[in-house]
Length: 307
Image 1 (cartoon, rainbow, N blue to C red):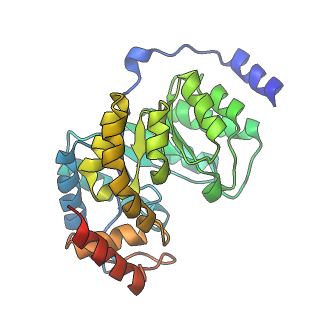
Image 2 (cartoon, rainbow, N blue to C red):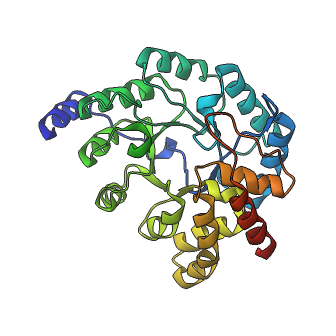
């Protein structure tokens, strides 16, 4: 494995121009996709973005797993992206993509080329479980084709593919691969990426935001950030300023919220909470299911107790 990555680096050596690398620090909210019956509810999506934009977030992620992208066709995804852009044109947007057919994925990446994106959030191909060299080829081909920077989405429990530390360090040599959303569950790998310094590391597990940013991560992509958004923003800002005690004071009240948001499969609890607040209908597309009645009772109690 080490030898194959070495050959990749020697054959594809590049230098990174840090002046052109986007700053992805802060809180990114992976947007839910509201539905009205069988259709995307664009009015609700627009209202959600306009609510989040003034809270100090770095930007939004459109059509990620929280956005039920797997249940949206191409035209729906493009329409959702257009709605988010219209709602907050100056707020940076990252687009989630996924797949397992490289040719079709590259076609989709090129189709997104004219969009003004802060990045593409790209996981490994799901189901296939390629070798580490295959993963290097997958991400490199997508990064070569993309006009937007690429964020590697390391989430083995969804894709079945584990990105090894040496693989990520090899991918860091590509000038268009700039960051990682870290759901890998490997603290040593997380620390190695932070120490290497070439990839900006964003926490992808909401419960790990504090520890990740305290150790040098630049921020987070957090579904829980739909709620108490300003407090999440504050936690990340205080940690990056080294104000640990103040950050802890903001963080600890968020822990029950984070726990509840993932007590049932995401994004059901988030959508239920936003529905309780009157922001959208509590509708998910199959095979996703709505939050349980017991979850709704717990959400009502939690929301009524929040400041």
